[in-house]
Image 1 (cartoon, helix red, strand yellow):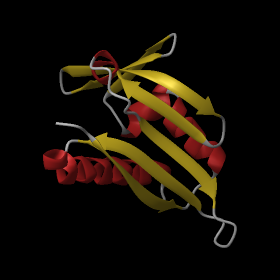
Image 2 (cartoon, one colour; image 1 turned 180 degrees about the vertical axis):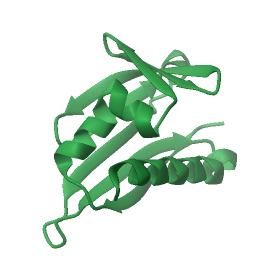
Image 3 (cartoon, one colour; image 1 turned 135 degrees about the horizontal axis):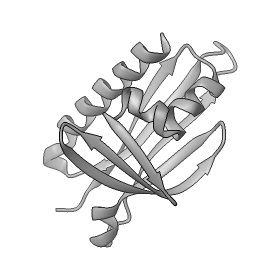
Length: 128
């Protein structure tokens, strides 16, 4: 089954600098996204409850976005990724975080709920 792209948008009361640290460093990611994170070259290893997943960082623009691809998707030849894109809303001065990800149609709602939970964890950590 082919994965479908989806986007979720969140408004965060934080600074770009704080958010950049939370989404691009192992210490930041391990506070809200995974139990632990290691990086070797451009491969991030995410640890959750005794399991691990690896993702290659495809691109990063400081203060704006970071994009990864799960290695299992890379092996399958899928052109999928997950990206965190963030910018300041000129009106509210809040940060808009846009999550772009892919999921199989029958797993779409579960995938969105998982991101909702992760972003709630992020909000708790940064006080947003």
